[in-house]
Image (tube, rainbow, N blue to C red):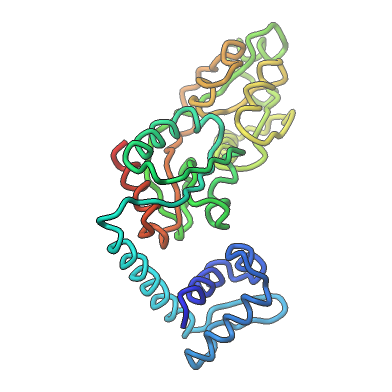
Length: 292
């Protein structure tokens, strides 16, 4: 029984989908299927029930999950113990938004670089809505993201800071500016520019629902930075993390709309797969993040 097979098993147990699991493990679906079959032959029973549409863990598969996780964890801890007296080295792939790179990533990487100079870091930036998915699908080792109301159980979260959520409107003379300047803001009439998906979209939708608001949506965009740009042109209003506004080149062209009951702030932090935290490089970045 090879450790790789146990990792393949855990990937399939988490996704319950041969296509997604094989993509996560960087192997083909037939290779994954062959390894799972070999594993079942060694164990002596079926670990999954599968047909053309569904994959499901058997009772034995559920029990085997604990064994597989424990074995992989012990293996990584053993390898880490061999490196205790050696310098931690390896590659770390990070995903975050451009705004997070300015506000939260810089102090993290500065500390990490000072303590572990042999760790090679690769940074990918993009829409924060994809941060958790990028880690779950093994595209990145860690990501900086807003903590959702329900964090997937496979993920670990380490807080780096907070960001208030604020409503913004244009400062130029336009219909939107006139509406937000009213004594009672007519939210039902205000055109909104919203993220296509993600925690920000969820918070805004919940805020609307609680107040029975159904405003017109002018545009849906990918990423928070584009929200500020479109609002500055007078096209609508938006809800954004304040940290995005602070780092935007358009922050002098928008204004914060004072709202007493704005959605709760974002808890921003580092996310990684729970079962990988014992790996030397991830353990190092996790320890550094705890001290920021």
